[in-house]
Length: 413
Image (cartoon, rainbow, N blue to C red; front, side, top):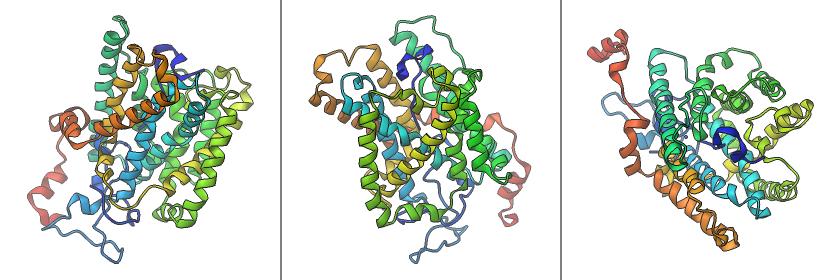
């Protein structure tokens, strides 16, 4: 069953000013890492201070705060951009899978780790979330508001492009890419719980297993996806900077090559034999016409495979600033905006010509998908759509008396 076979025509996705240092932040994210649309994937958030030449953290000066580029770690922005690039390519390959076993193998391999990578980074930079009023405000403006706006926008787009004028607006039934916003909102709200329990990752895995064998959960807020992907978010909460340093060693990069090669070979073998819907984590085992016990087995097996491939992916993400580092700050823009073109290409029959399904056509589709997603992550696009992705909305929230006092008298801080 392909992603397009689901009722309501919903798809699986994703996704999510960096420092020149090669190492992840050495301290927990500061308040500036609170979720905004620019950093929905929650990566690339600034650390508490700039990094000194020796690698230690230095306290920022109140009179001359460090520039954002000095606070961000290029590694996470690079990882976000490369992951969103794979998301777009995966969407480009989806209509080619029936005619190309190679495209299907690439599709399965990428879908094993691209969303888990985003979610792990999201969890890593959610460690400082404490449900304070300021962070709740950021959660609303950076995730909830874009969710509502794009859920409505996608609905009207489908009505027009797919000639379906009665298609309903439903904030409880995320359409296409918006499921990730709903999931991230829920995961981040539960962060204090995961920081409190003794064994957060085993507990999250147990919940994911139970979800995979529970066919009656329903489609509200794509709760199956929320629960089945949740262990990756909790894993991110549990990670520390040294874990990222570990997978970025030279030995890890060397080991990643045969692991990826083996994954591609296995995917090539499995492509005609395996239901790709397992990778979407959108249904229970029973809904995939499989016995209930297989849901538990597949959940644990896919989690292990995904973590291994995510580690291999991180091993090859550059830690220095590159030409695409700045694009990592706009991955949410690319993620949500490219959905209109990805769905439109199906509505308007762009994959109907026979040449598209030949090797050169498949290469062309891949390149076009990469170019489009890159363009949509650029700063001009971010500036144009910031009103929807990062609304300030100060009028909607009460003023924090303590914050006002600090602004009037900086010495109190």
